[in-house]
Image 1 (cartoon, each protein chain N blue to C red):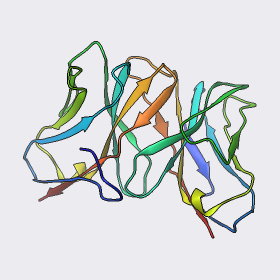
Image 2: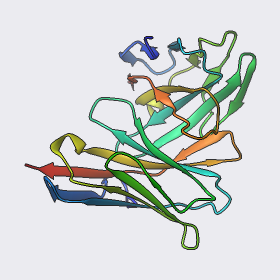
Image 3: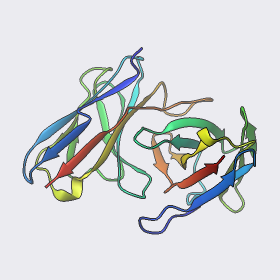
Image 4: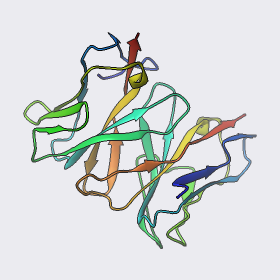
Length: 111
Length: 115
């Protein structure tokens, strides 16, 4: 899910489907990764995080997978609902002090 | 708890004007930060603070000043606004910079337009 210019990549799914949102990160030294959800007109909301020494973490209806070999992060949302429609950002923490965001993927869920 | 609050919600400035964006949190969080978000972009870090009296620059600090005199407040100052500073500004806070189940709480944002 890398964006080009002003256009966010968009993932369109049907309600009840599973969604997979991808993110490529740049710094192999990053310590920590977080997925955020941002609804229109609101600030980002924490979804799930994962440390760099893990490759998978599960939450409620969400799973984050980390592949350090190819510097790839994914967010899987099970049984996607219309309320999941939002922009999703991955973010990485480097040096225990700064959070760097990716450019986001828009998820559109049709009823 | 009110969480993270930001004022104002909307602001229009003329080029060269100065203003302060306010941010406050009532969760006793040590870490606070300011981001800007431009259309179709992720958030970019402007400045951050790991505790009262300590601030540091992020990715895009030019044109912005911050101070952290108390744990609760982290104002962002624009000394001479430029059209390139038109953006949505988010303030965030978290208990620690990195921790298991770390959550960074974001405010609702301030939409700034510089003419």
